[in-house]
Image (cartoon, rainbow, N blue to C red; front, side, top):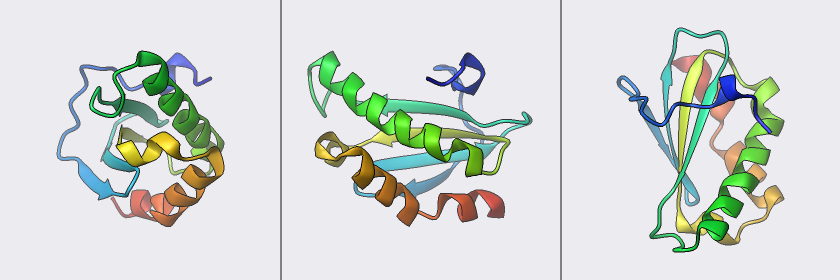
Length: 110
């Protein structure tokens, strides 16, 4: 589980975010003044009305991010808005899809 310092506060607004679109998620990120990344995850009630199901999706996606965290450039706020396609995907499928977005390369260009 991520330490509290890696959590994006729920009331944080990203200044001039850059958006990346994928079938399973929308990623919005912006440069921050910190030495580490902060991550936020949103799953709408439109995806599933049950909190158990929404939390399961967030846990699975958070596990993927925890694995990728050491290899990502630091100093960004990242907000993942998960879509309904993420609902049925496994850990490995999410990992592959996140790899296709070239997240490391995108963050280095900001």
